[in-house]
Amino acid sequence: MSYALPVVADSLTLYLQEIKRFPVLDAEEEHRLAVRLYDDKDLEAAHTLITGNLRFVVKIAAEYRSYNMKMLDLIQEGNIGLMMAVRKFNPHRGVRLISYAVWWIRAYIQNYIISAWSLLKIGTTQAQKKLFFKLKQAKSAIRNLMGGDDLKATALSLDVKESEVEEMNLRLRGDCSLDAEVEGADGLTLLETLADDRKNQEELLAEVEQGELLRGEVARALGNLNEKERFIIEKRVTSDNPMTLQEIAERFSISRERVRQIEENALRKMRGALTPLLTHRNAA
Image (cartoon, rainbow, N blue to C red; front, side, top):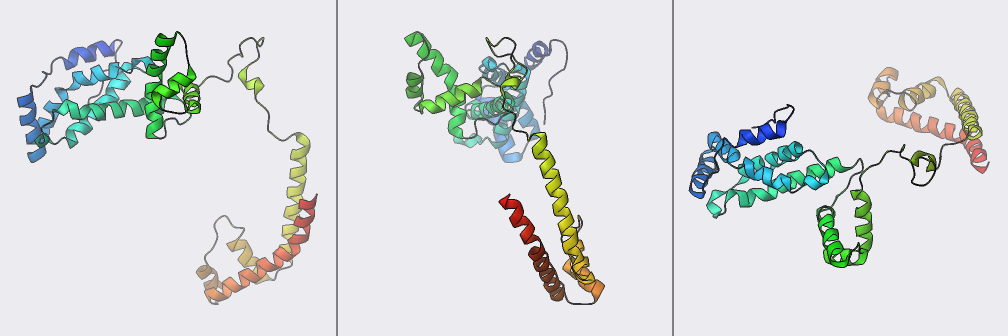
């Protein structure tokens, strides 16, 4: 069951007008419908329970407008949370649906905000998620009380470490463009301040030469193997689509164990031929 939002110029206004058509349920009607859904799996009752609470989702979503997300996106995520709550709601526990659903609605909205906030993953633990959504409120309260930001007071009010507040402050700033200019740096961009860890041309050329030398040595080591050993190494070790022991065993009419022994012996020969070269290379 899905409630797609209309895509028009003023879709939020139209959506708010649309959901006003659905009456808010009183406690008695809500309980009756919830029992029908819980006991009889009545999907029509589920539909009525959902539509009767869409306005509550809007109210909850409005609490998260300061995170600069599109209101319709927040509402849509909240609606998914509402549908999950309706699906799992037990009317026999004597609790109103919205009192139960509010936790689902907030969870879906908060998860959406966290996933959309930054290219970097944030709020990976429950404690971090709580800090993410409580930090702005705590900083505002401290600012009103003390006339400015105070890292230590903010950390104390949230019962977390100062380092955790500093880290979350950075995350709350969101992503920025590498083309953005550094303040007071006369046109210098963030990209230009990053260290270039790439290898220079001399290092790249040396790696190419060493790679060619190693390939030549591997080819010579293969040339020292007999025909059967070379075939097994090429088909079992260096191939992009290696053959199985059984396939090779059938080809040479020998056992799988014999193929394995030949392979181990061939690899031992190759390691013996390549070890001096690799030792010299590492020493250099």
